[in-house]
Image (cartoon, rainbow, N blue to C red; front, top):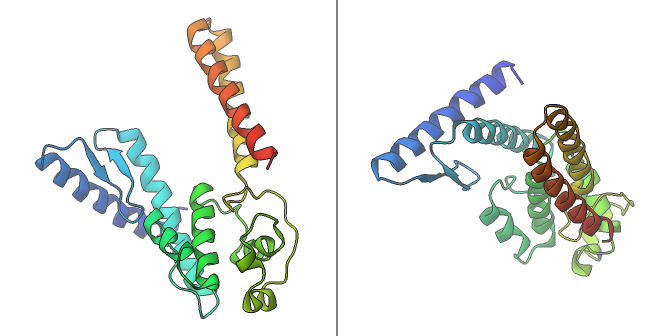
Length: 207
């Protein structure tokens, strides 16, 4: 992610965040809204801001790649909840799947491990919880023949189970380190967090 393309994205996004933070500070506000994704964030949290900047760079990269590879009828890849919800709630089933795809990518934090648009839509066409009007759409059926893919949840996001497992494993490794350091109180809080994640994962696994 250090090639000229991403360096330009990082400079662009970093400048936008600085402008948002400056405007919020001038107005006496503790929170601003992220560029493109329109999420609230505390303007003094440097660690979170660095994370958000990287995430938005990945989102913009996906929008660029989608523009280059998407079918000619597809609109711009949505990056914010308002954008993808508008597509999902519209009359066009083809536009709706672009909205679902954008939401799924956002849930995956714009990771490159996510399915391509073509694979994602083929998976939707075979998934039992996809709205029947989408599964029966003639144009989508012709362009994206149904193909069973594992990892969807009822919100039509892909990979939540795998991401929860990965994050839980990271927390477990941290728990072991804290235990060896005698940080009993922190270990207890970590165990509570792990248990909540496992409950969440069991909810996804039952769908």
